Length: 250
Image 1: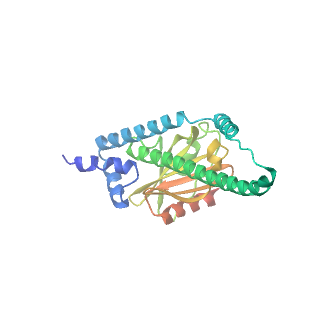
Image 2 (image 1 turned 135 degrees about the vertical axis):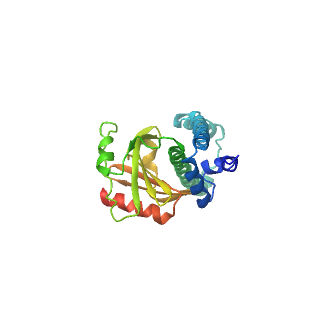
Image 3 (image 1 turned 45 degrees about the vertical axis):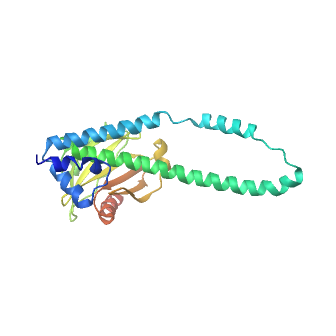
């Protein structure tokens, strides 16, 4: 069967592990093959369901504080004063170092979780039979469509003279926050642009700048109270070029 070779690559595609050329070829195939697109969509939905289940049982900050306090109390040591004078500064340096390292690790984990969710949304849209809810290349048609559907507004860039083409948009949810999902065409590639309120919970803690999630390149920044994400299996320069157009439109 002709699709068997493609089906074998779907898991790697959903996880962003395919080479750029293979990912583009598979993306083009799914736009013409409803069966493969459905298979990809099922894999994305299962991946997101597992991720949501894993987050459901994360311990709260209050629980962590109680456990830390309990362990600290049970392991309290009695030192002589003269030893404390020497030991306390060293312990403080060690604690600060540990806290800084934990903070960095938490930021990395948060970034990877959000970037993974973004790539899942991107792949799911491309695999869907209806990747956009408003289908138009005219920004003056797409932007008004979001009015009343989102609690914020945004500007779309003028694409004349560029290689990018607007395909349309849809309402999406990132970290349980409603936002805009716009899809652009660049040669044979599709690029997603996500726009959400900057004050949205954990998203506010994400650093701005370029990033990567497996075979996808990303760019993130904040502007006028909004957080922008550009995601695609194109080069970092292409991602930067589309990001610059949005910067100028803002």
